[in-house]
Amino acid sequence: MGKSSKDKRDAYYRLAKEQGWRARSAFKLLQLDEEFNLFENVTRVVDLCAAPGSWSQVLSRILIKGEKFGRCAWQDREAKFRQHMLNVVPSDAAPDQETPTLGDSQSTEEGLKPRRDVKIVSIDLQPISPLPGIITLRADITHPATVPLLLKALDPDFNPDTMNQQATHPVDLVISDGAPDVTGLHDLDIYVQSQLLFAALNLALCVLKPGGKFVAKIFRGRNVDLLYAQLKIFFEKVYVAKPRSSRASSVEAFIVCINFQPPEGFKASLEEPLGVGSRLPEMLADKNAVAPVTAPVLLQNGTTAAWDSAPERAQIADKDGIYDVEVEDLSTEPLDKNIRWIAPFVACGDLSAFDSDASYRLPDDHVSLDPVQPPTAPPYKRAIELRRANGGAYGKPK
Image 1 (cartoon, rainbow, N blue to C red):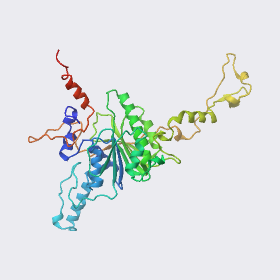
Image 2: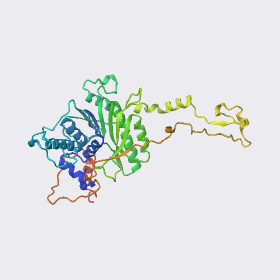
Image 3: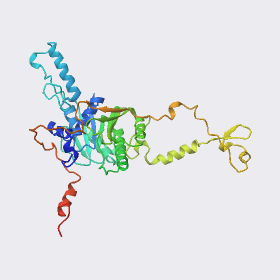
Image 4: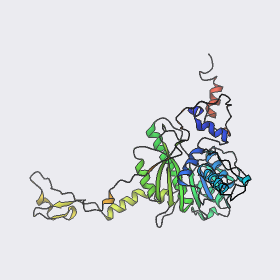
């Protein structure tokens, strides 16, 4: 969210600073929650790739402080207004009838309803400035050693010597807004992002409870439908969502997985991703050895037999040594076996909200605000120091 980027002209960038969010990405999570009600009955959450902490900030203000945003705040105001009109409450408790915007919250002390036994753990390779009630870990989500650290943060009584990579007290929600440093080569960026999502999913499978939810950023590409099908193995419902605060010019979207249902006998582990890991070639070889794929052979007498069991194979060849092979008719197989499954695409956010790709005129008395939380250790900091040491962009004068 640097000042030299297009964020400087983005309405959500300015709105985030005005409302106290660390980054404009907070609005993406708020809009996803408006559509899918992600925080309903949620008290234990893991935030992956959390820096600079805008999504953790949303979790802190909603779950720990009890604030309400967007649709929830609007519904509460409407309910209070109806109660006031019916004289159910005293007139001095009448709420403001002004329609709230996306970032507006119910900030009065009476309206705050903090939840009990809230546990939020945030993980990132970059340091995260402290947030009230948030446990922050600086770790790599692709490394197996991260699982014991996360389980220890979720449950202080966890014993890492047991070599158990399943959470004793699993979480309700796992979110990930992580993305690699884009190169501009879309195929490469999509591949690296898919690997990051793969690591986030494996970590989520270790700590997510049955019925839990998983939300992560994806880059849409040609083969993204394969990803949807893989997620469908573990979750009952899978959606692809595009919040209004996400630029239409960006290939990013968010995968929303609801109702975690692990397959019977499945055990998650970062050492064996998705329960298979490096044993996949051996498993495929064993499967092919047990049930080889054969095509029926058309014999001279009009009957068919398997290729390996065809009698007198040399007698059914023509003069050029070519065998007549009939491909088995697949029309009798179940219709749903070869049907391609496509995840539903959902647009999130009010149509009257700001358009992240549009430009808006600022008022005459507008004052530019500094970021709520400057980057703690930005990746470009080292590059800037080296450039200054070399005398600037064009080097030291000769």
